[in-house]
Amino acid sequence: METPRLEIRRISRAFSGRNVVDDVSLKVMPGQVTCLLGPSGCGKSTTLRIIAGVEMQDRGEIYVDGNLVCDTIYRVPPEGRSIGLMFQDFALFPHLTVAKNVAFGLTGTRDENMARVEELLARVGLGHFAQSYPHELSGGEQQRIALGRALAPRPSIMLMDEPFSGLDNRLRDDIRDETLAVLKDEGTAVLLVTHEPDEAMRMADEIALMRDGRIVQQGAPYNLYNSPFDLEAAKFFSDINVIRGEVQGALCDTPFGQFLAPGKPNGTVLNIAIRPQHLRIDFDRAGRGPNPTTVDGSPARGIVTRARFMGRESLVEFKMDYDDSILSATVPSVFLPKEGTPLWLMIRRDRCFVFNA
Ligand SMILES: Nc1ncnc2c1ncn2[C@@H]1O[C@H](COP(=O)(O)OP(=O)(O)OP(=O)(O)O)[C@@H](O)[C@H]1O
Ligand SMILES: [Mg+2]
Image (tube, rainbow, N blue to C red; front, side, top):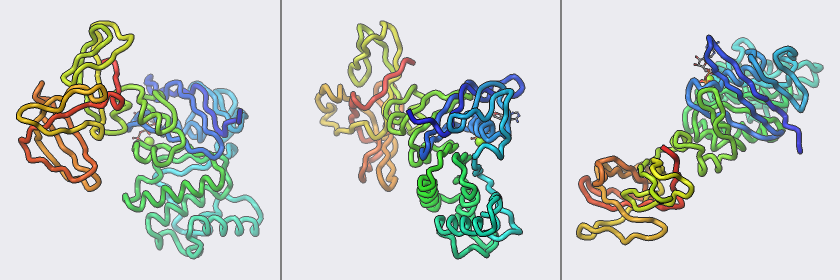
């Protein structure tokens, strides 16, 4: 098997008795992007700072290309780890030209350095700004210079902590994609921290979902989205509807009919979660809904409380007859039923996630 470019094993760090990073293990392969994704305060930046060597772990080891760079006794200093850093406040040196900013960490001869700077500025599309000063550039351009500066010494690993959060939406998508292209081109292994699932899905080959200092699930974006580890993991990626039911004889009765619950003991309470785009909406036929099917189960009636056009889709909210709870559905077109309209909802059995409550 290929040696990971970066591997951390069982890293922990406590601040005043609280485990902020708790037994975290991770691998990043060469040329791959791994995203450390999780809510604010879950320990993402601390993990990154430990890998960079600016924070010490209490336990655990860090390996680069299979070589130990840091445990609790042995410690390669930050500048010896072949790790590049790019943080949210990527502050360029204001008194240096763009070219000198990019050349800052380089140790080669003058000619080598100039060639490398030229190469990188061309790659980030800013060759013509070499002699400009940072304040003469837009936010997005400065971001690309910072990327060039971080990449100049050819780090084999790049650690990025919410590097795109200072940019406005439209620009951010472009810069993300460009950045990714440059990093892939250079074969750099990337560990990117973000609290935005969309950003992680867009950038990552692999996502490590972090919560309260621990990694709760790790895998390809597709797997995290489609097989979330628990209800909270499912919720982290999108809005989600939850219905409850209790198991009797390996079946779970709900207002939407029965769900299979193989292997679950009687009396287990289940949360059945379904994303808004997977609810099926059908019309009311004089107080009756569509016929039950094996794929969709039984329909339950709700009254439209709100319908909004969102551009790519319409969002419709329902107050359900069975217990007045609110469910939301999205429809990929213009669908704006009037408030008060009765409609029937069905749940596709192959689209829902079933968790113990
Ligand atoms: N040097 C420190 N001393 C004490 N507590 C700290 C220190 N550094 C971080 N913490 C605490 O550790 C927790 C995790 O912080 P961290 O910065 O790693 O979170 P994060 O996941 O990066 O969050 P965010 O998305 O908001 O940046 C926070 O509760 C923070 O207050
Ligand atoms: Mg942080």
